[in-house]
Length: 423
Image (cartoon, rainbow, N blue to C red):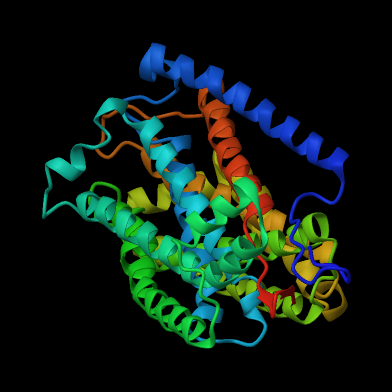
């Protein structure tokens, strides 16, 4: 962080050394548990899971679409600064982009661990199927990650150059590499970066909406054998849910990193703006879910009605009422309902964390219930709850994401400089 004695001093690590040690110990525990579970997954195969031929998609698929949504939502929040140039949002655009990259990497790890043959993960790039939505989706992910990295580069390149000219040793080398050797900090170079940042953001918006998370919704919506998924509203719900979880994540990260890493004061106007966005997305998400349920019940289609009965009153009801409704809608809206609370940093951390956890239930309620019911009369009824290996590998993969984000937050200038200083 910048100080009065040195305008260009940059030390973004934890303010409290004991907290830093405890945090890395926690991540180490997650990686240890996840590593052992991954060894069991590799040696025992799918026998280590509770997945069956009746319910072939489970926790890993639910977490995959969850983290894709986090990524797409965080990216779209970044466009409020980089494309639409909304005042004050530039303070969170780098955090949003970096979180989007990490979330996408975590999502792809979940896809990888879910593959029956994990060694064949590169096959979609060799044998392409133009009529396959999944094939298009895989290639869209690669393009999307490229857009995210490009945006993050142009967003922080000028500050990387400033740090490279003032650092020494390995830090100097690192910042020069990250800046790709472009150390010019003139007005013309800054204008060049801003132009390309905006162009990349404009290109990424339709990619994120229609191909990345909207496209993930399409993977479910094209399944004719599952009427619960086979809906034109499904991709739209995926997008709104992504905006909901992504906004909550960015708001939470902004407060935590500002207070724990920089020891700075949170911009309460910006916090209020993010909180209002979050409240709006909660309302839209709840409304679309209600509309989807209403359409299903009015249609009187047996499979759709029965699936919603499982979600609302059956074995998945705890997930719907306690986590989806309670954690992602009701609880955060209590904090978001008053202006004073919206401007209170730790209240917004609780609201954001509640949404981030609650949306996990949304993903499980999408993936599991439709598979429990048989697609044809006479076929067996499915049951599913993740095994310990599935939970442990999931924790380990999330530990990888937390480690990558923490290392980046300790090295990268995720808060913009102004004339060399933090804003």
